[in-house]
Length: 71
Figure 1: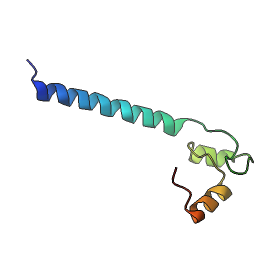
Figure 2 (figure 1 turned 45 degrees about the vertical axis):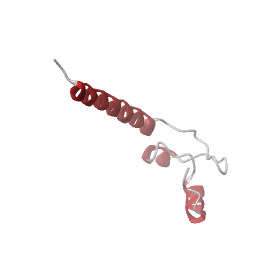
Figure 3 (figure 1 turned 180 degrees about the horizontal axis):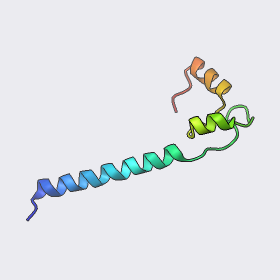
């Protein structure tokens, strides 16, 4: 018979697996094809390399220079 520690370990493991699965799904999702900042299309190479990207390379560089890259 499982004790409380065993049940807690199983619950933690299931929660961790669920969180990792959601993160993996987010990382592979295709984003909008347009940049959030300038509205121009995000190049296919950038969308393939960073599917989570919401800005083009130029706008992302500007965000990082301004310190706005934190969501």
